[in-house]
Amino acid sequence: MGDIIAAACDAPAPQMTKENNLFMQIAVHPDGTVTRPEVPLLPPSAPGAAVASRDVPLDASLGTYLRLFLPDPAPRSPARLPVVLFFHGGGFVLFSPATAFYHAHCEAMAAAVPCLVASLEYRLAPERRLPAAYEDAASAIAWLRTTADPWVAAHGDLSRCYVMGSSSGGNMAFFAGLRTRALDLVRGLLLHQPYFGGVERTPSEARSEDDAMLPLEANDRLWSLALPPGADRDHEFCNPARAVAPEALAGLPRCLVTGNRDDPLIDRQREFARWLRDQGGVEVVVRTDHAGSHASELFVPERAEELFAAMREFVSADGARGAASC
Image (cartoon, rainbow, N blue to C red; front, top):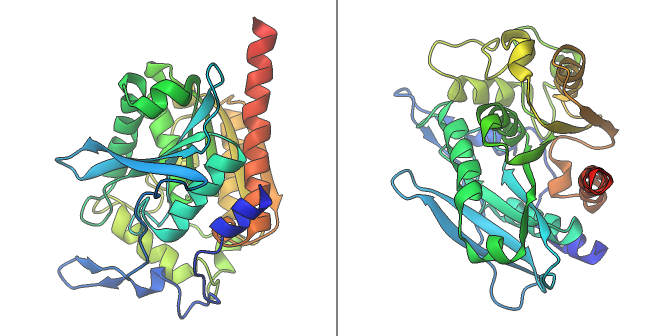
């Protein structure tokens, strides 16, 4: 299993600095449009890969789709895999399920947990500012509830359906969980390094001016491109702990919040986890003391192993609860 994760983390990753950071390469033009840096893209896997993958449409009119990842060989019936709906990071502005390091990350996740992963291609800002990504996320959850997709039907256990996101995808997973509680489908939210902010800087944000993965200037730029026009950083999409009423969290499923100590967002993540638990009464498992930087799990096998271990523990605990209640 370690070899699979190491191979998946071999996506090209030059020594990252503020100067070559992809977010710093976003060009914002006077008319508000952007030019994005080019990043390698990968097609779905060829037959014989350790993890099979294929793309399925979600809403062709919006250009959204899901890339499904299934361990190969898949478990024999009646054994079924938990289903993880995954939202990639990128500050709501960059990347897709086909981005090389996110494709590799989902392959590694499917093999290591193991699980059936559905990675969402959602609409990006600034062309489609928030809440467009939240709407696409909610549509993906609704798709899972009604789909007759052969992989999901044959190998997925929708009684163990989890919504997961990394960075901006973690933000999306939280708001998608709020929007789809009534569907009674999602067993838990897996929020990895969720991307939140606020008008007032936290200490970890204030120290991040020269951070290699998420420099302060890039953080500010991403929020300016993603939030609704005229919104400041205390808007609910950015700072829910300040702007969302705790009673709005009623019915939210169990949550796993993970983060790394050297992430500029770590103070926000810990504050968010406390808010969920202490004010919202949400059951929260907190793992925010891992080593590493923001998004290091995409390139460092040890960080990926830690994240997948936390996922396995969280999902296994749900399985044990289900068995105890039978």
